Length: 117
Image 1 (spheres, rainbow, N blue to C red):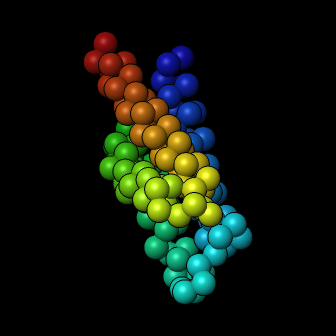
Image 2 (image 1 turned 90 degrees about the vertical axis):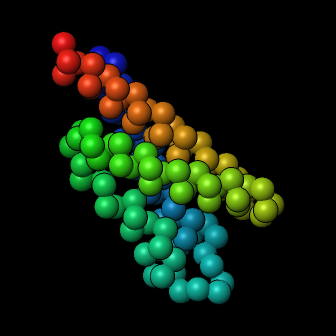
């Protein structure tokens, strides 16, 4: 039961972050200095790399994605601190990235405990 909750929360926050970053770059606050396609490649493509493993509930993919997600946490903190117009987007990115980080970590831990017993 705990594993299922952790996996569901991790998957929801991960997909939420993909959706947030896509909407942010294309619709909510597109960059005036760079092409949208370049910004999408830089911000969304890295999230798509471990997506298959996260969707299938692979522990290793969850653990690697937690390392990746820390970059989005750092980006969210920077935006929330520096840009008042996009502060709410930065805060949403912080919440989603930390939710994924903790739920994926707990999912991996609970899955390892289940495998040991």
